[in-house]
Amino acid sequence: MQRFLQGALDLFRAATWWRRQPRAMALALVPAVIAGVILLAAWVSVALTVPAFIDDWTPFLDSWPAVWSSLVRVAATLAVLVGTALLASVVFVALTLAIGDPFYEKVWRAVETQDGGQAPDRPYGVGRSIADGIVLVLKGIVASLVAALIGFIPVVGAVLGPVVGVLLTGRVLADELTSRALTHRGLDRRQRRDVRRRDRARVWGFGAMTQLLMLIPLAPIVVLPTAVAGATVLCRRLLGEEGVPRAPKA
Image (cartoon, rainbow, N blue to C red; front, top):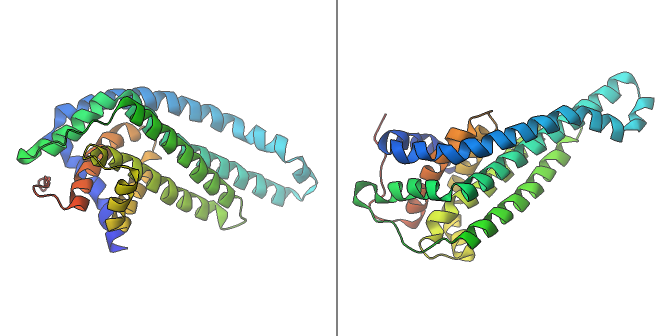
């Protein structure tokens, strides 16, 4: 749990990069705003149609007592909304990193070269970026479905579903956010997985906190550049590299 909390705090520590590298971080807002507006509009559209969708697919509840039918429909609505929100945050990351790769590469390089460090020069590649984005979305769909299904469990589902969803999709986000820094060092998928396992709880905590903040409306626009910077520092710590840039105390 201590390592998990350390990972969560790593995201907040990364916020100091807005002061250290304001230009690179500010430029990264451009693709985030574009993707954020698109996905927020899509999610709001879905949210407005969910109640009617649930009513149409649960006609058998009309014969139940009013209290129980209402509770089940509310629980189902919340489960779908949570699942789609989790999926939207994953798609947001994939879409933003895809359309804004040059901007986020500036963030990554700025962090790597801070305090005299050197940025690894192994190419990431457009094809690999697209492939990783597709894998990210597919994993996000699975995690969101699991969270939505758990949400249907009476009584505990309303709480357990979102918690499980944040943890699962958070891990998916952590894998994606750390992929660039590790791939630029020439590590393949298996090697990247092995590096993350060196401090699995800390990586999971970082991803879970990122996902949690992503659920706040409009927050993802600022959170994603911060998470990219934080993930780069986290990778350097996992690899035990010398000269890990330390953000100054606030």
